[in-house]
Length: 466
Image (cartoon, rainbow, N blue to C red; front, side, top):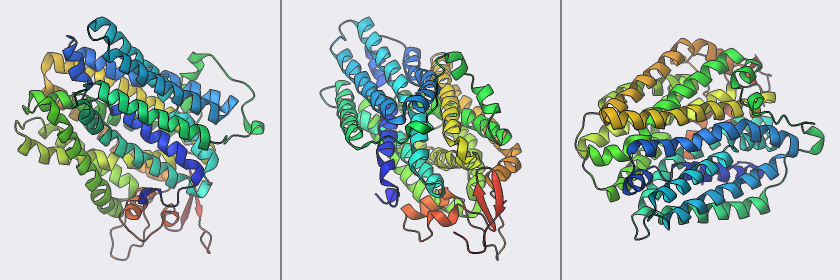
């Protein structure tokens, strides 16, 4: 895969873990609503099951992060991956208890909670990458991680839908996930080495969950907290809009567009094709002209209008073009938001910032399915989609009023569209160029014209460059 060209070998197991967790988190989106309906429960129950994963992740992420600082990264990552495998075994067992809907639902709920608790290792994975990747390559690797997550978020639902369309029913996705998780666990056990030497570990572990979960207090201690707090706010709002929309999409395809449950996977596949095009073509085009911060604002500008309009079509042929525009907004925001957060963080606080960012996103991912499910049950899908549009519009406002502060924190100058501008653009553009055969390397694009980014500071670049 060209996207992995030049990535340090020690980072590869973590990138695989990122992919597997993202696929596992979305594998059931097109399957679970119909499983819940077949068991005789409402769509709101489905939304609660979706919310169980990020809710558990929110509680686990800061605790696992602190534990990894004290005990080392490897044991936490390996044990948590074993937990993910166990969660899918629970889900598979639920298939054989469908004669008792209450038992089946309880097992499915338990599997979602266990998977979320072990999925809280995202912050540990980010800290591991910071340990094993050189400072000058860190931004690029985090951007690759974000791109891998974005791809997995789109192909996960398609994989789930196709595997559930077999004679095995929802046992199909469970067996697929078991195979993927088991393979990942074996690879991690053999390939993953400890990244944090004993002399650099935290001498103690604070087991008080109230201390670990006080995200606001932790965020206030960060360098450049003003810009990061704005970015965390954008992350919460965007994730809420994104999660609310994706939660109801499988139901919307069937109820509004009249397609069969078996065809949901084809719609998800179309979305995946949209993502590939937008990441390789649209993102490159926009970021080359606007930079990372400008691309973030562009994506947030497209998304509310597209979400407002996508509510109206009643046929697939009309829906797909508008769905493509929604995908443009999401494709522009997903990688650039991660990249901008990474650039705004001080290098010495990268792991902590990633942990907080994971947790605040998990808060939004927890609330969004619950709100979307309740809204869908009471008001229908149209109102729910418009709710997503409204929240996305608020994210645009926050990003807009914070543009100067965020640009200053990332060291990214405002775009200069003059004919003689030689401004170099951020890592997201470089990633897109590398994937699509561009010639500029990532190391060139970490730097703005005449400046070198280190944490939050911007200092004059040396005459000789890097």
